[in-house]
Amino acid sequence: MDAAEIPLKAPPVPTDVPTSDTEQIERALIDASTRVPVLMFYTSAIVWLLLGTLLAMFVSIKLHAPDMFSGVSFLTWGRVRPAHTNIMIYGWASMAGMGTAIWLMARLCRTVLRHPLLIITGAGFWNLGVLLGVGAILTGDSTGYQWLEFPPYVAVILFVAYAMIMSWAVLMFRFRRGDRIYITQWYLLGAFLWFPWLYAAAQLMLFVVPVQGVMQAAVNWWYANNLLFLWFGAIGLGTAYYMIPKVIGRPVYSYHLATIGFWTYALFSSWTGMQRMIDGPFPAWMITASIAATILTIIPVATVGLNHHMTMKGYFPLMRYSPTLRFTVFGAISYTVFSLVGVIISFRSVARYLNFTQASVAYSHLGLYAFYTMVIFGSMYYIVPRLVGCEWRYASLIKLHFWASVYGVGLMSLMLLSGAIVEGTNLNDASMAFTESTQSILPYLRGRSLAGVLMTVSHFVFAFHFGLMLFGLGRAASVPTFLNPVESEGSEAHL
Image 1: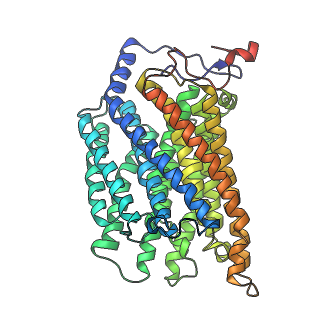
Image 2: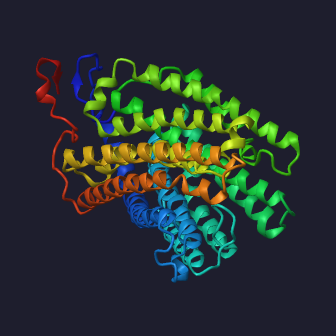
Image 3: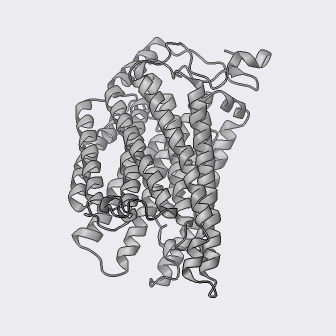
């Protein structure tokens, strides 16, 4: 195994067995072949993250100060908000996820990345597509469908880019060395195949041969929910299944549980989305089937959660030291919370109060940030040093990044969910005017802006630290950057 970023300490940590020279050379060649493409994906993703974060702060402030820049058309809330969400989805989350997936597939398939120029070109086209799409939204050329606001000509560019990027990832799996297939590969390969199906189906049914009437809303919610689960969720879970065992130096607790979790995740997640339209003008079976599928996602949640917990059993103290482990375990726990919140708000009795409130925004933040983004941050803390040849320079910056992210997303989710309960209760009170019900959540929206400040700090700190690594200004050391000095643990810690 790699020189894992763990201090060997009690409670028990297995003795690290040195890899053979052949394995070390093989991994060095794989890392060298993926260096430029993965760093390009990461660099682009972080640039989009910073831009999306600034727009997020602007959007949040506009919710309780709507007159700010109200006379500038491209700075209206109806344009900036979809620009922000599409930047975070297609700019940050997708590009960071694809970079991580390429590196993981190369490592697990034990094959170098051939013709990396094709992937680099694909990344360039993807950036071009996102840039044109965001520009189109800000100038008023938006489709109006949530998470699909990019005009159709941008979709063509993204398709071309995706074909260049992921074709080689699938080919790596095809020409993998060894017969064993790891659970991470299952999730990543599934994500590679699910995304083009989701995006193409939505584009076809909304723009090429558009469905009529309310079915457009059904297609839109189906796409948004499945993008969250089958694209981001699959990459996030696959990454967590790699990082947790790799860092602590032990195998996954149960491969059978992992298999059950994968297939039930693929089966039930694909039926979700329609529960967002409870009491709408849709066939009852459609919404009921989606509610049932959402409830049944408890099965993969339970199996994945149990597998991760049993894998980590006895090793939780290592979170004190390892950046990757701390971010990844937090993200894995957040996956459970995100899924449980999704089940609760899908109940008809709850949805009648929380539909058309901030609850759906809180749900998206739990999934895209608390779960997915935190796992991706953890993977970047593990992968980047292996690409640039030096370690992260400041443990203090990593801790600041972690705690600002945790408190930021925690406070934001709490404010949005609390505000949703207040707003939903007031909306269902016939004696209260609509304007009063909307004004009642202003304190919670201001709290959301405060949470946004914390997340903005965390993102700029991480971008600065990544920049140091990118320009070779990290630590030249033979051991990873631990969050806390191992020597301070006395007899209970040793390298």
